[in-house]
Amino acid sequence: MFRFLPVLLLSCALPASPSCAAEAPASFTGKGLSVQLISDATTIQPGQTFHLGLWLRHDPGYHTYWQNPGLAGVATKPVPTLPPGFTAGALIYPPPDKVRMASIRVHGYEHDVLIALPITAPASLPPGPVNIPVATTWMACQRTCNPGFATLSLTLNAGPATVADPLWSSKFKELLHSQPPALQGWTLTAQRLEKEIELTATPPAGTLLPDSPQFFSFDNLICSHPVQHWEKSATAWRVRLELSDFLPADQTKLCGLLYSPGSWQNTQSSPYASIAVPITPGKP
Image 1 (cartoon, rainbow, N blue to C red):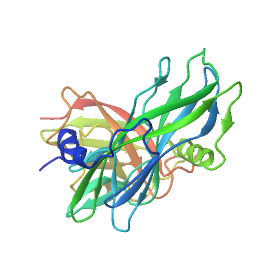
Image 2 (cartoon, rainbow, N blue to C red):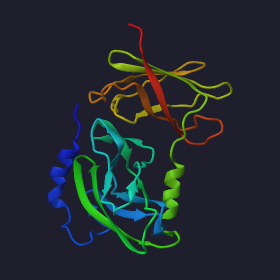
Image 3 (spheres, rainbow, N blue to C red):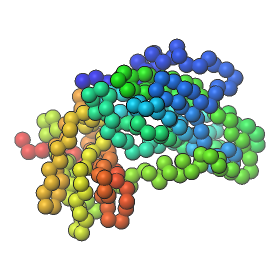
Image 4 (cartoon, one colour):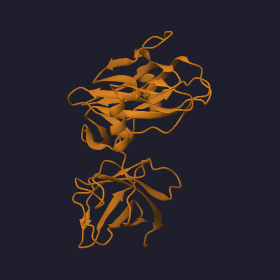
């Protein structure tokens, strides 16, 4: 078992990064993909929360990675250098797919994808241009992996009123709408066994069991590679999930996304739902 570490990513990629200039470009084309720094606004106002984003377009057969890549890979990550008074929130990733790095199952994307970062402007912001440089890391894989690094930048305008970007604002709305809702009404249990966690999911009355479920671990507690064998009874789903060799220390909850081609809730159409289930000791 192995993981590509961010240190390795940076050491491999830094020689290929663009030269530092007064203002870096907004896009970069590397092995297997192109990366573009975008925003949902062209003009920002004092105190506003807007979004920066990385728009990734993959060459055929290539993929990049979710926030938890799984057994192999490195998550795509933008790190901005913000002007004084600006603050950043948590990265927003689309729900992942199961993709393959060689024979290994990992978590990522083969389609065009947007990864966003919410930014809040200070309450006092004079009018004029605002340049934000962003150090960006990724790994694009097909049969082999190509780590990448680029410093990108975007210049927005500060003004009295927000102006949405006519090209990109709808993509950010789609991303925010795609964020999985918390699973409501289900009875979930997670028991810690020696090398596994047994998850049981029982729906509320009147909710059908969805087909072909999969679990995606937020924090690499669960290994991405093994096939998940879900057992369906008349009233519940049960699965034993293999613990990762790189599991976080002292983890007390099973946190991640449940996926099904259908929906987990009668009132929602999303094929994904987020869960955070307390882990209890299993029977000896």
